[in-house]
Length: 486
Image (cartoon, rainbow, N blue to C red; front, side):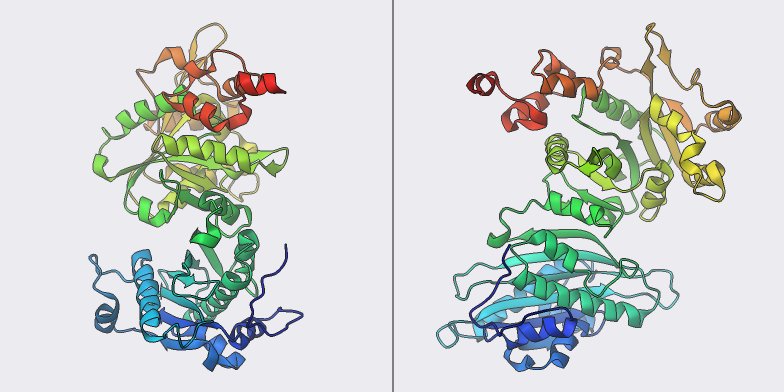
């Protein structure tokens, strides 16, 4: 795909360095905007000042560090927090509106406006919290007062343990973002990868990103979310029932968490029965506040791979179904359950629950998954069950019609006493009062029936899901009409 150029561009053969990125924008006769940076100095705009030719690009650079000044400019936040997405968006909108008021279009008909902003908290003196922030840009790609603005908004977590290094990292990211917004907006996947130009993934994590505006109307933010995990930019991303990416910290902070891991390909009545019954048990537990409980449907990256490659259409099919059921979805890179629990533990110390089938629990007690740990399976179990966690076990129907539960579950002989220990201490409990008619339902069986256009799969899915699969032609389903037209 051809690189984007503008009428006001100066010719550049190569754009490898941060200086060259800033200089290309500075030497463009039309790109013009503001920089508003709160919390880590004016690190991004510094690159543009130093590159040269900045007077034609920078309308204003400011850093409203004092909270009273910040409130006077951008308004008072209800929760008195300043490092938030809402604050960032207020900054972007305020500065764009000021520019539109102060720079007349009749005098500057070719100007392409932008507003870059960040609000961040770098590492604290005690080095307990590494810091995080919101970064964004609101920009045009064509001149004119009626030309709509586009937005890219992202959330970052710092990994470095020095405030000065975090400031420098922020400056590099901001420069990459501004350059990408103007010159890579037609290739959002590349834009995403280029945010790490001159940066290492050990310096910075991007765990949320949202694109909006006319140039991104074909961009699905759930797919962009997937790219963050796929590219190793973060270990997990989350999206809400409305399909938009959402900050995991906002959803999980100080919550009781009940998580279901699965392929959900497609989501079946078994999945929903497991959720409903485990949820009923979970909210009856001590220290579980129903109003502070969050249910998460989690899909691991390994569950998204087909023949070693991630099938993005298949991912979108699953996402649409789960969202249609009003669920919050987490896409993670955590193959082992203990890593998922560790991840949740970053945001809450409250009680957690994992709902799973018998086969999943048997896998947890398989030593081969923990050979990379110096402490082996004991280290993993220490991380998994040390937290205030309980496993809710959904039974499995055997060929002879009997059920396998925690009472008769067979694990490896070496693991038998360990399993008994967790069972005795109430860390593993059976899900009771299940709908036995669902026990013969398996996602892979349903999927095969859908692909082969067999009758009867609809009854195995939650209400309305079959209709959505047919309307959207998900999972390879084709109507009789389409089949006959071939």
